[in-house]
Length: 74
Image 1 (spheres, rainbow, N blue to C red):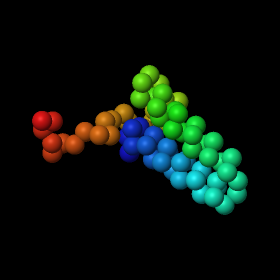
Image 2: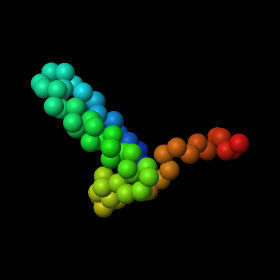
Image 3: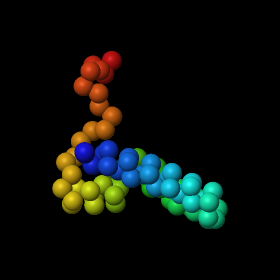
């Protein structure tokens, strides 16, 4: 698994857990989903992602999540 895929997996999991907790426990759990969305948005513009830094320190290799080797890019 690469850092890119780990970050996407973490973000998706946190959003789904947040939605489940908002439904089952209290609507304030939606703040977690908003935080994850904000972090993804700022990472897209700045390139800074705390989760990616942590995953890199844990030894995951960097990669490009959205490159497809079968597509020529045209």
